[in-house]
Image 1 (cartoon, rainbow, N blue to C red):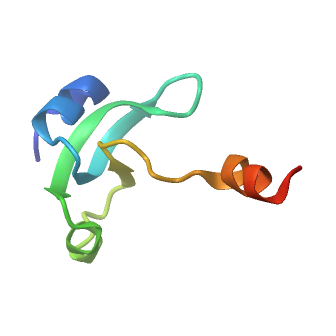
Image 2 (cartoon, rainbow, N blue to C red):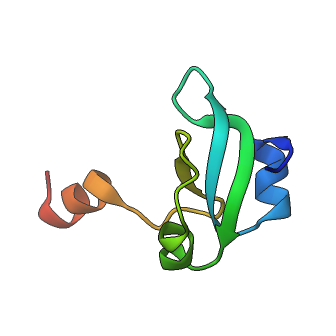
Length: 79
């Protein structure tokens, strides 16, 4: 497989792409800290459709999240 990279290296190498990572580690806040990228693409569907490696895998997006979640809902519904 690939070489182990930090999250910062993944973001720089694969900007605004979906990645599948094995041999990963999380930091104290549950965000990915490092791992080996096995698949990457701007297309989420392409990354998800690749064969499984047989190892535990994590899926991440290296770009800015567009998810507004509860904050947007609360703003629009005046909570």
